[in-house]
Image (cartoon, rainbow, N blue to C red; front, side, top):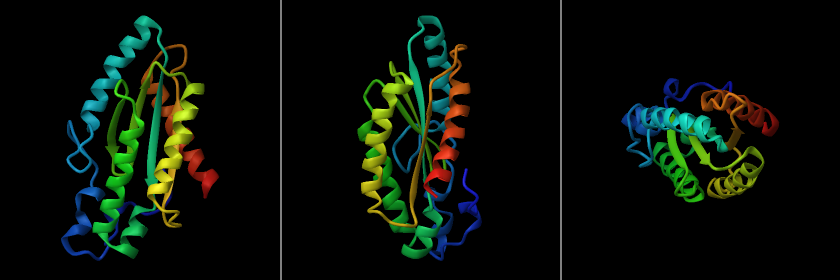
Length: 178
């Protein structure tokens, strides 16, 4: 996570929209803002896929993608513009994900993706393609950054451990690009 103020603490000067959906973390089975799965469904997918990975010893890689700088962008351009940009990034991510994979919005500005039948090395192609596509949606705006972290489960085949590793790598990615 970055050290910038949390979006819920920032008044973006856009009336009631300051507490709008893009600043709120999704909490249910789906995310109405992006149309993606929400954190509850993501947890269920991770549980069932962990069982599949353990039983059949099949590869899977978890990818975390986060958009940083949205609060500052919203202050400069307005909450509606920031929300539309965020939705464009979300749709870009959804286009890059295969039908056999899973994508969810799990936090305010964070997405989680499960690449089934994909090892960590093969995931690099997805990561670089996705980074380029998302950055093109952000139009090289200096207020916005995209961070990506990915990991495959260790020998235990626990996808939750892979999520923790991906989060560490995501934080390192933001430090690298700062």
